[in-house]
Image 1 (cartoon, rainbow, N blue to C red):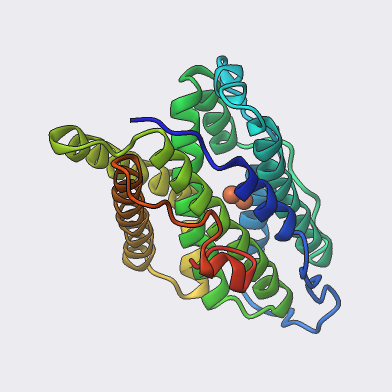
Image 2 (cartoon, rainbow, N blue to C red):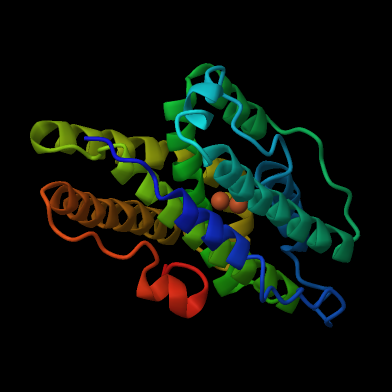
Length: 268
Ligand SMILES: [Fe+2]
Ligand SMILES: [Fe+2]
């Protein structure tokens, strides 16, 4: 079952999300003597490259199939990636604050881009969704354990955006008819979670030392990442059920939810 994505809703959402974005306090005092600081700086350098610092667009060999699949979709995708670029800018602000240079390459980033390019646009969108879910776990732990006020404010802004991105991905998948029904649904959900754990493991391989130095644990990270995966799937189930009800003739819910209207972005 396929239905068109509500382009106008998401266009309005991304434009609205540009407002009320207080700039982090780049010159706020911070502890200089923290022993894990160099690990944190290296972690931020890699995220600054991976979170919007590379190609800010879909890069799969067949990306145009998806981009041109619906009128207005190109603009919405561009608005989404503009927010990713903004994440890179915010993380770059932290690097300037820590007096560190950005990096232009890393093995995990090359792997990330290589998979996106060769596996086709559907898989690329899944990789991006799982990266957003795993990154949400990373930023939440960074926010929880970080002692630097500017770092916490950067995390707040990025987490706010990622909540919106995940709602967008959820709506996109529901419009596509996923997760399906019966055994297809079961199979799709299992592959989603397994791929999610792989994405989380790649993230942890690069950033686990930093998060552990800050006080987080491996168990805590995987618990948070898994919570994100299952919450996403639960929401997708609800959204898909709503879509089926609409298709069956029920009245469609208004395109902008109460949560979106009230906060400017979907509730996380
Ligand atoms: Fe991001
Ligand atoms: Fe994102």
